Image (cartoon, rainbow, N blue to C red; front, side, top):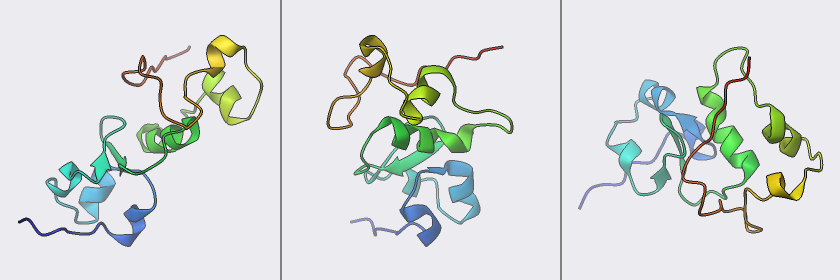
Length: 110
């Protein structure tokens, strides 16, 4: 049986970029363990984490380049601004993603 290798303390309570994990000595095979999920390419978070809009934005944040930020409906939701119902139903009441959402929908606006 493979020996479980704990993550460094700095990575245990939050999502993280795989480059950061590598810089902290985490081996690539550890990043494939069943206790971690990849909500986005190059990002890991704990499998037991509650998937909410906020938690997914926090998970994606390490992938943002300088000067980039969340905008539009995402920003409005994060700020608690009321939205029309067709835009507000991206997540179930328990925080899980709707089955129709297979991945991230990222749009670059000029």
